[in-house]
Image 1 (cartoon, rainbow, N blue to C red):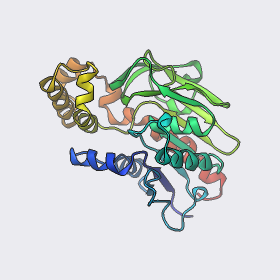
Image 2: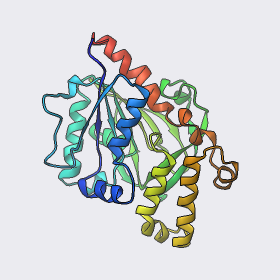
Image 3: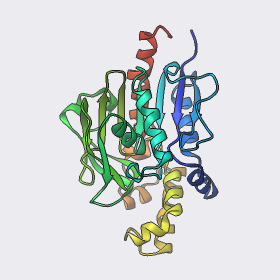
Image 4: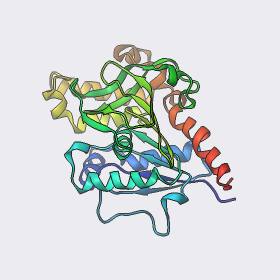
Length: 288
């Protein structure tokens, strides 16, 4: 049997990727791919960059040929339009016809929603940054395999300014919080089933720290931090917790629970997607 083959769709354009790397970060797609390889060591993982007009699918590959497709976050906005956005919508719309399971984080959820006929807007509640607090499973979410082993109420790494406001037909709301009603969704199309979350289970705390530094001027302007020193202290604390998740002092200071600090719990949505969507579909397709 062939080995599992996964595709990661990078949501950012080349400029944002380069800027993030210049701050010491990892490209979103590479970080996602590394996590998928960790969770499913036998898998081969490809990356594509639809926001870059020069980069398509890897040579010789088709969307149908993948066993799972994951979509990263992005600094783009669906309502901003332009080729960088429409190419991604078109690609995901085609992916949803293939039967291949799809998973989206943050921008990934928004692109899946748009491709399936839903609507994304700028969140009138403002930005959600650092941690999504008090994310609560709906009745459907408590029974859903994506949340197997998850607490009914949890926190998660997050950074987003936009949100899903109108779900497409065939969508089931799985989780909400006070900032965004749509924190997690299952979307079923005639072709595929997609799971999406508005937060970032794939992000380690060090990546959050880098994002905070990278968009720091905006965050100070929006009132999240009093100034550069305040922001730097927060980012430094995140980096320290990334190195030492057992640091009670910093976990208490920032109200960060084991849902975030324990990696197995943090990434469980993605692990469950592999277990309950990707691998069973491989069997159904006669691939494994």
